[in-house]
Image (cartoon, rainbow, N blue to C red; front, side, top):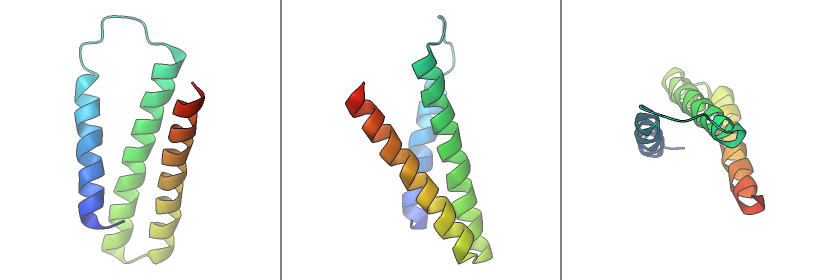
Amino acid sequence: MTNKEIKKELEKIYKERKRWNGAKSLFTKKIIQEREIILLKQQLLYRIENAKVLKDKTEEILNTKIYNLLNYFKDIRNEIC
């Protein structure tokens, strides 16, 4: 991932997390799982950024692959549900 792609993805996550404020009802299991995935994706993007700064290609590739797997998992889950 490029730095520009990382920033773009992080902006999407920040917007999503901003919408979480002010929830007035109970959370379903699906909502909790979606939020967990979003937080994990955010953490992975931070790790990718740090790996780029440290020039650690192994760490960068590993976290990028995990990030892509999460996106793939989310897409499949949306198709099933």
